[in-house]
Length: 141
Image (cartoon, rainbow, N blue to C red):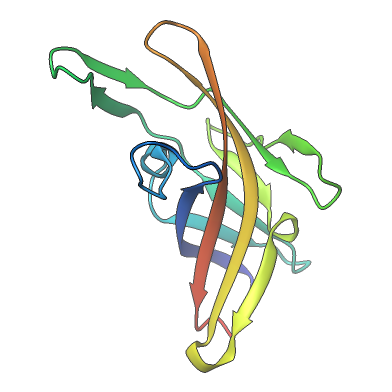
């Protein structure tokens, strides 16, 4: 890929099944879409995610809760989770941390990495969940 910043579509899906039957993690709404893939002069890439505040009503629709991701980790190829740290409250994941598949007919590359997210709950406890982040890149090559 050529040096520059590229907007990339992404989705965050649950790695554990839940009662609501949705395969999508609430964390998918916890980031600004699209993400940005920055390719530097040496050809390495960094995926940048910008967290946003999520608002959600309780089951009885009386109380509005809001929260923002406190910490994000990604799984390395060594099966170890490490912090995704960046500047200005953004999270950065090296592009080589993702595993990729290429669909030649569609000119579509899909990259995926497992995440561990830490977020506050309404009762002030820390909520930790894992999910899979997938990026979709079309026609970059």
